[in-house]
Image (cartoon, rainbow, N blue to C red; front, side):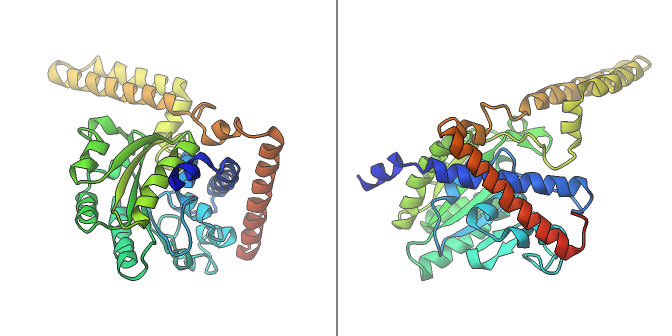
Length: 347
């Protein structure tokens, strides 16, 4: 009965407030990257806010999170200092990890949060956290975030098995964007991910990440189960990935400027006309596959019906939405400006 009451009181205003801050920070990082102030690749979590915040909202002091290469949204949602995060992106010694972690290898000991660029590693890390909770901090839980492209990693499957056998207090959250870098997941993953998890004896559910309240309710059941010592759960959250695998993703660029891609395709097609036999057939098939992938990517834009912030805002008062977005922007701008000043970079 208590759980039912809790589920009926979804804190939409709080969820939107956190999502707005996450989105504002991610967009600010994208701007820093385009200005050449962040080196290497940058994997943003724009579009995943509902999946992240709907889960993290249930966490409390003593809980832990293991994160994949899209590491900043869970940390922002968990309350990690924004200025320290920004300085880390800039490679500054005063950053969260002294400027040595970058955006894929972030650690916040105060919040028991750890990220890794190794695909599938979050599940193993979460099991380690959960085992420690089980032995030393009863009632605490661990959460692992990873993409569906990691679902075929052997260590992730081993983690599911271990969590089941040892009844670890962990929630595995699979963010399913249907893309594994630039490959459609359906072409590399067989069967159902929820059925796969159930084969290990884990309760598993699938939920729409564009509806944060639905994620919140599903996470409530799984996290309450873990806190009660009843073991692990598996949650598949459907999300959109409008920015591609990383910033300046070539596939996204082509999808957004299809005319340029069409001109290139015509050039390649003309090249196949001079080939004969199997070579011509192979080139034609390859060109068709590239065209199909580009066409599919064109449908990955974050439309209002798939944007978790827009969908949630429709359920709130307009004045509250405006005030929350304004405050989120102000807070992020202050943190970014302070970080740039410390790093001696132009604001």
